[in-house]
Image 1 (tube, rainbow, N blue to C red):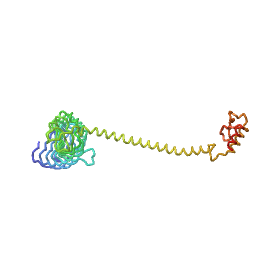
Image 2 (image 1 turned 180 degrees about the vertical axis):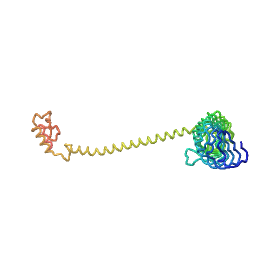
Image 3 (image 1 turned 120 degrees about the horizontal axis):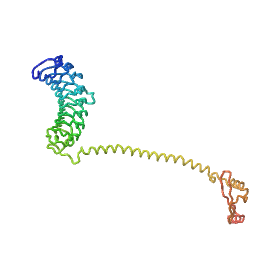
Image 4 (image 1 turned 90 degrees about the horizontal axis):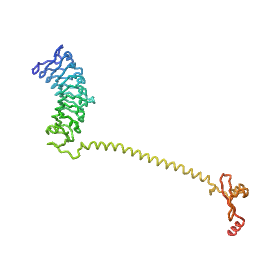
Length: 365
């Protein structure tokens, strides 16, 4: 053990061939330099502490640490850059301390600077990433850490919603998310985390009621203050309205979805109806002149085309000068004849008796 001394030197030169080394304590010294992959020379290493030194640079992606490692403490140094994704391969790891550094992650990494692969450290029970420059959100895969009892992500720049997958941390007892940029409502998933005893969500941008769980009911105002609009029957918080924003949120979302569906549908139906009305009006206007023109052409008795003398001659010719064979009826004043004209029109012609014609002429005179 070499901790709590004033040992100096380059940390990358400390490690030699140590095939049987299992524990090494180098914390609270003055080692400097950057981490290297020399730790692969210690395949049996289970415990590595290098906290509170002057180590700089980033954690190498290929750190070379043994998969037998159960405890890793690199806290309180000057480490920068990303947390290596290969940390997720340390499946035997029980405790990981990277707090009090300047870890920030890659700005181009849209998935966040806490690697989702940490969720593969299935035996992890203690994780401290506090006092860094981590951003984005908590990856949903962190909910796979069912044995995690303490989680400290405080004093970073983490943002977005607290993921409901946090419910998977069924062994969690102590949670610190303070001094970040978390927003929106606190998920009700916390109400199913019966082992949670201490929670600190102060100095974020959270709003709405706090979950109905022991950890939140017993939380002091110091653990809740500094948020955007938390409310509940807790000393120091404003009481929630009868119908809280949290309860109304699903209804508002439902109304928005309903409006989004119905209004475009009604608009489409109205446009279709207007199009059909215009179509029928135009078609009717197109057909009306044709019909009227056809009626004029085919109207035998059109004023502009009627010729009485020609008509009379056609009737005499067709009925063979009113031959009795074309007579279809007789009355008191004359006989009715059927005439089929050359124009294919069939007409009924009444021929008056001679006595009636003479009397009519006298009356006209």
